[in-house]
Image (tube, rainbow, N blue to C red; front, top):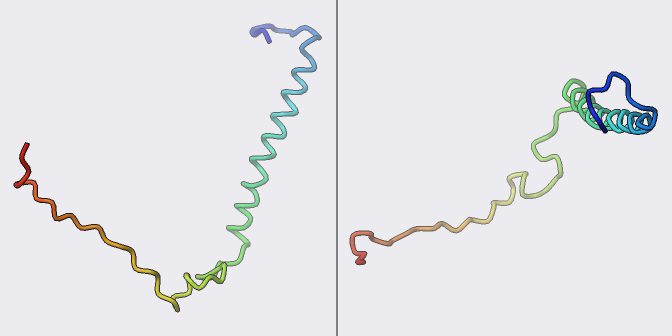
Length: 80
C-alpha cells in the first residue's frame, strides 16, 4: 500500500478495514489477559504453599539428593 497520500484510492478501503479489524482483535487479545491479571491480583484468593497438592511440595517426602560434581584435576600437573 503506498504511503503519504492524503486520501487513499477506494481500492485500498478493504485493506484498511481488514487492518483495523486485525488491530482490534490483537488489542482485545492483549487487553483481556491484562484485565484478568489485574482483577486476580485485587480480588483473587491467595494460593496455598502447595496449590497442586503434589507430595513433592508439601515437605513430607524428602527430595531426591542431587549428585554433586567435584573436580580433582590439578592444573599444575598438566603438561603440554
